[in-house]
Length: 114
Length: 113
Image 1 (cartoon, rainbow over the protein chains, first blue to last red):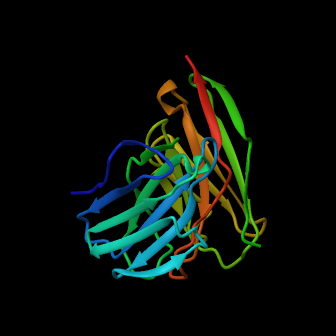
Image 2: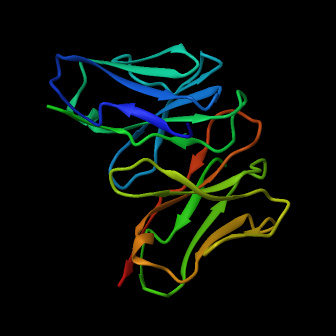
């Protein structure tokens, strides 16, 4: 299995809702990432987990809460989001636990906050 | 120092032509330079990557040229096809060196049939 999967593909939520995004990889990669991508912009790093521990939080608002239940799974819990949080949320993984190598991206979750 | 500057922002090429996208970096500590290709509605996917110990790498119709002294690298797409129409991101990172890959702003390529 050489892919990163993400669910759901699309999500519409209100500002008072709680929802979760899910990411899964079975490539034995030790680092997993969450990115946010706005239209016509490059991916913007949000969080990095290395060996299931949070390594990087790019000063992301607390309404986004990451979780890494095991080495294959990564979740992003969403609560009280704002309309400006509407974007494509990408999950990625990379082989080593020290970073820098090729990142393998999932197809993303298209999020719309109303 | 952490920026990667990419140009052009958009590019229109005739089918069969050569597409050229340029990037420049500032941090000489970077030692891994991947190019990612992203189709609408999809995540970015690695296209080709280069380390600074070589000046050129070719994979099929895709070639990276790397100029270490000028701190520049470029992607050449030979015999461009309509199926190459996508957004291309250059990037830079250090292996090992942390998890932050610095992405260029992206180039939207359209290949006319």
